[in-house]
Length: 239
Image 1 (cartoon, helix red, strand yellow):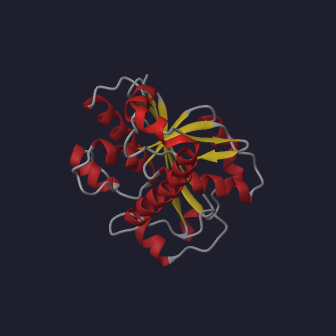
Image 2: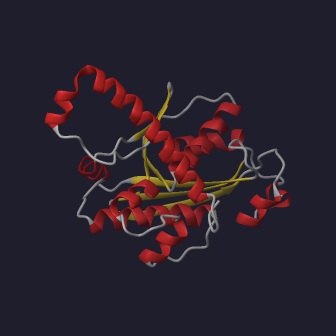
Image 3: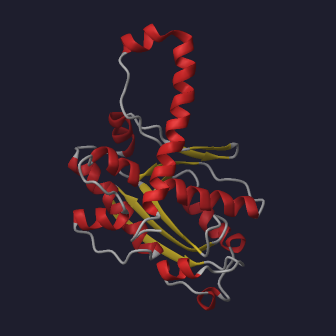
């Protein structure tokens, strides 16, 4: 089943613990069934660059709930769910840093990244920023509005699954060989998609030494992929 919750954070500055807005969109059986959005008082400075990107100012969040105050509302909406975000490494880090700053335990859930999925499934597109994908799929978007970004990520995932004939997230992950991201009380594992699957014969001939080297290489490649994704998302038109 195509059931998930798409999220998007905006931040007041370059610090990951400075969430100032959150959009949340719930999808059941491929259809949006609910949407919610909040302004968040980060209790931190706002950088002019961030204000220029999303338009949220200190005056707009004055009197709004802090992350700690809002968490009891957010937590039951995402705990145990399939979570989706565009460039999920960013949104997951904002969530983790916000929880760490408040000394709050992590919820448990699995998560998917539409940036990496689109990059794998639409190999010739060139750019996979949210606004580019929105234009590609004909999705109206007011970029850097947290709710609209979350909604767009949700629609992109549904359209990708439909285009390639996947009936649910697990089927999609299995077909692409995804490593599904997780957040849990003990920490997290990032979402990733291997560039290719090694054949069984190659895997067997490598031996234990090759397996160890492959594990180290995979981790290095994963870090490079996340860094590259973050740099592209920081380019013109996307924070």
